[in-house]
Amino acid sequence: MKNTLKKRLEQKQQPIGTFFELGSPGVVEALGRTGLDFIILDNEHGPFEAESTRDFVRAAETANLCALARVREISRPAVLKLLDVGVQGLIVPDVHTVEQVRTLISYAKYAPLGKRGFCPSRKDGWGFDEPAAQSVAEQMAYWNKETLLIPQCETVGALEHIEEIAALEGVDGIFIGPFDLSISMGIPGQFDHKDFRAALERIRNACHQAGKFCIYFTVNPNLAAESFRQGFDGVAYSLDASVLIQAYRDILAQIRQKTND
Image (cartoon, rainbow, N blue to C red):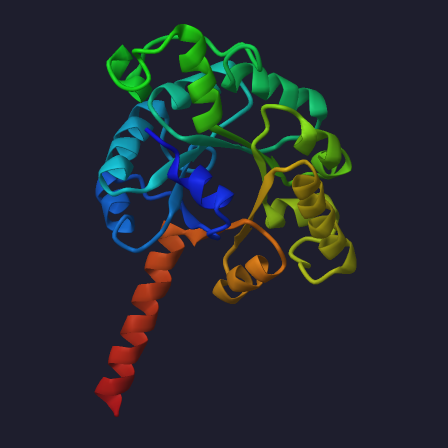
């Protein structure tokens, strides 16, 4: 399956996604009718693992959503299982060092970039879908191209080495987690702080100088639009649960106001 998020990023279409926390295939199908370009199946903070993630990926495919997943940890099983059930990219949290990212590349990318184990799986119809008719080398090159590896920059360690991390072959882009990054910098939630703004510029510049994309997370729709104006390539907006709660609160407030008028 072609990676639609990758294509949108390459065509500068400013894709917008959200984090998936509620853990229901029905929610994925509903999100597919909103106009979102991608979802991030959150195996770090969400209450699910690879087996249920498979069902969410299937629902995303029927809803024409690109399904990424955030891994629970930097380990071979955590990376390999999500790729084999068919996620089209991995967001990787809690990155501190260049060596950690090299390890991730070895888990997530086939040779010659990495050492990902080769096995027919759901991602390729257990060997019966495209590009199964191609040679093993061609198949590995295809999946290396169509599967995105996206470390998060959310620690001072990652920030201090961001130029080297972004330039690594096998890293497709960087995802910025502003909350944890600001906490790691000792300025929690101070997104207008000059040091935080300088950090964002450094990360964005490192990505673009390396020919990679940069995705920003925000819970503020106004900041989402501003992020594109600042040069970020994609935006992940909020969480499905938070949007659901806020939407119902707003609707109920409107109903009660009109009822009392």
